[in-house]
Amino acid sequence: MPSVEFFPVLASGFVLRRLESPYVYNTAEDQLYELDEEAFSFLKRCNGIAPFSKLVLDAGEDSRESIEYMLNEGIIYLQEAAGRRRIKAARSPVPSLRYLLLNITNRCNLKCRHCYLGESGNKEIGAGSFERTVLQFEDMGGLKLLISGGEPLMHSKFWELMDVLPSCEMRVVVLSNGTLIGEDEAKKLARYADEVQISIDGIRSHDLLRGKGSYDRAMRGISALQDCGIPVSIATMVHRYNTGEFPGMQELFSDLGVLSWSVGVPCAVGNMRANMDFTLPPEEAASFLGYGFGAGAHESTGDYTCGSHMCSVSPDGAVSKCGFFEDEPVGSANDLRAAWTKLCRDYLWDIGELECHGCEVVHECRGGCRFRAKQYGGMLAPDPLLCHANGVTSFL
Image (cartoon, rainbow, N blue to C red; front, side, top):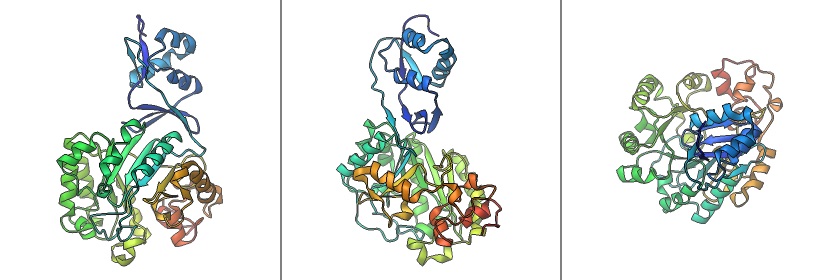
């Protein structure tokens, strides 16, 4: 503990959120720390105005160990002179809306065979709607904003939209195919994005799915992003023609030092309906879900099925459970809180309501994807992909 007077400040990149319980969130590292009420109250007062000695005195002797931890973790720092930092401590609804997938356009420069959106169009969100949606999300305690499309860089005012973000306290992730990102775009993105996720769906087979030359352009995009210090993550979809390339992809992505690698399986919707030769049956596709590393998916908590903390907004402002449920909107992003309340009521279930609620691994997989379950058997049916991944066949 310091022997002279200093003024504690909640460090840049750390934000306070009252979700189901109090937390401090590191937006740069995507790390969430659960707090007790005393620690939360202490951090709310770390605004650079209150002297360290007074905060420690008010917190009591028992708090010294946790304060030392916050200093060591870089959650707070000590400045020599008083200087205010405004601290927001947004309160969430319950369940908390932590992750927002904001699809800003359905335009795309590629025609991927597996795209769930189908043919690209000309819709894009307006600048005013974008700002209102983002500010509402922050006010609801949002942690991570996922900006997608289509291809988000195809939005006619993409950089104007990005200019909204520096005043907001949340993690910003741009989801892109990477083919439009060169040195100039990467330098600009470094001002706004904490992470850029690039889709790589194979090595030799990537172009079969996304078009000739798309792999090389995406890899150049990754290089440009990393040269600008932007953390890159990779998303891969399992398809019939990349199954032999997963060991090679794992080695490649590890050597590149990417932040994370997530592996998923496309649903038979959109363009995939016309390209069913790319699909694998669930029992075959499931074996590839063991690949990947790093950050996990945007998981549910409590006793909820998938999506307890996430929703999607389409370019026209419609709110839905996720992109797959875009045709079943629950409301408008003009009133994101009301839409979220309706979504939780109509599209979020307790695990006990599932047909597979008696399964021994149901609290791990949470029944899997509700859209895939709906395709195979019904909204409350098991997701066969997750059943096979977990070695469970009794509920299929």
